[in-house]
Amino acid sequence: MAAASGGDGLAAMKPLQSAMKLANGAIELDTGNRPRVIPAPGGQLPSSARAWIR
Image 1: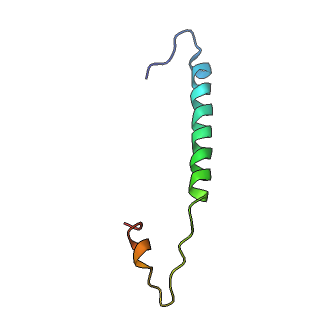
Image 2 (image 1 turned 180 degrees about the horizontal axis):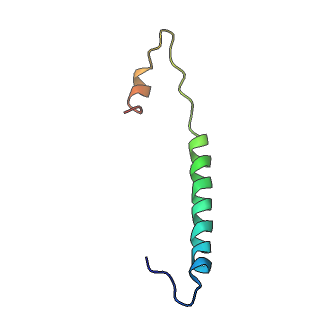
Image 3 (image 1 turned 180 degrees about the vertical axis):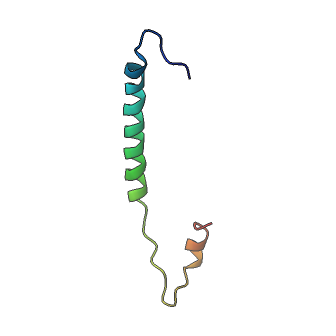
C-alpha cells in the first residue's frame, strides 16, 4: 500500500483505523453471545459439543 503524496498519509489511515476498531468491537460482541458449554460430570463433553471443538 503506497502512502498518499503530500504528507497526508496519516490522515488517510484514520478512517481505516476507525473501521478496524469497529470491526474488533463487533467481533468481541459476537464472541460474547455464544452459549457456554458446561462439561458433564467426569470431565467429558457431550457429543454435540465435541463437534465444535476441533
